[in-house]
Image (cartoon, rainbow, N blue to C red):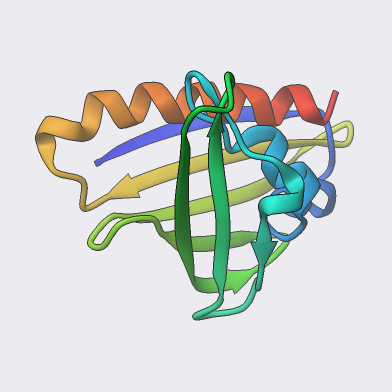
Length: 134
């Protein structure tokens, strides 16, 4: 289990778009050496709905499709995602004043030997999310 916090220069309703719209999702949900083209992202933001997308290597030689399942959806306050069962991600969006949002990302259910690698990747992604909304 780990928790990361990111401050985003946008109100929660705007930040929530990063979980409901392909363009902002594609801007932050990236991995080292890969992008996520917005035209290859579909999002059905309701309980049980899916985010379906493809990581594409920066040189275009490799593609990695992935899906994320929505658990509960209470935007703009909270979204629960299932990345790989049994990993559950809870994202809380809280107004932090001056039009900013505190984003708390809590991951549970990861195998201990993957936790550090995933935490590093998520920290990078959350930095990309903050940059998108600047």
